[in-house]
Amino acid sequence: MVMIVDTPTLATLLKRVGVETFLAELADRIEADFANWPQFEKSARLAAHSAVGVVELMPTADAEWFSFKLVNGHPGNPAKGLLTVTAIGMLVDVATGYPRLISEMTVLTALRTAATSAFAARRLANPGAQTMALIGTGAQGEFQALAFKACLGIRRIRYFDTDAAAMKKFAANLADAGLELVACRSAAEAVTGAELITTATAVKAAQRVLTDGMVGPGVHINAIGGDCPGKTEVDARLLERARIFVEYLPQTLIEGDIQALGSSAHATELWQVVAGRAPGRTGRDEITVFDSVGFAIEDYSALRYVYDKARALGLGSESPLVPAPRDPKDLFGYLTELVGR
Image (cartoon, rainbow, N blue to C red; front, side):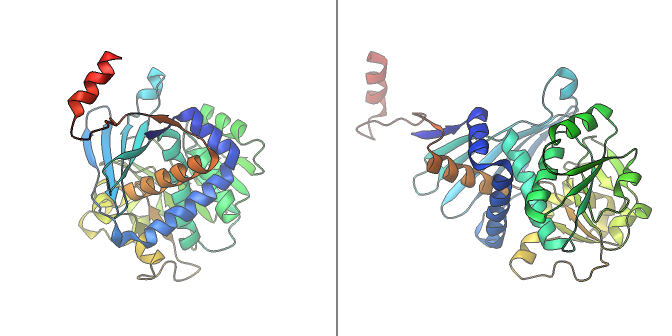
């Protein structure tokens, strides 16, 4: 039997666990898996790009589990009443090849992206930060705010989006979250006085959401909006004076903000910091950038976490997606029995 976790089931799980607890525990799970990075099979995602978006397959595996996510990114979808990003994921037992979990990953991807951002900031930002600037309050905005509150103790969010409706939505959704929300009239105003900056814009183009003169010493930048070829958010001149950290460099070189640096691109893979093989922040005045495009190991962590939590809480339905004949060599006979019922 295969466990199915659909969106209503995930919502129930979130209610039982608590969104902030879920984010904090998932951040810990992702960090632990990054510490075991060399044990995973890794590759850049397989992407089918079109003029209107992209459909991607993101696989990875260790000795125990194989996982993959099928995900799209279509910036024009909201105009059609559709989500920009949707996803499903699967967790497979390596020992038998049997699938054990099929899960919705549209909401789960937003949760794991936020949890990854927060765990990276714990490693790279100056401790004691209280204020985060959020540039882009679309689908990812609330998750980022709550993850940074849960994992780093952020209490103030200065936010801006070019879409006024998105800003109103963001404020309404977090009205009771225990955060001080400061609406700003521009990205430059939002970053004023912020110790952390998250960029989460959706425009599929080379942008300069953060320019060199907007960011002072000691700031940590969580750049999550640049996630496909030709899509960037951070000015190359700002990147040149920062220390940059990424998930999987071969993928980020194609899809991340470091595209803007061309052949001079430089970055440290974050797992090396977690494993003690490379330093994180080396001084209070240093500018650090987490150039995050999302990687399959984060999906692996999320699927494992949901699988374990759902089993512990008795959630998720069971489906006979894999045949179970009495004689494993008689698949036709098993089918005949089913047809004859």
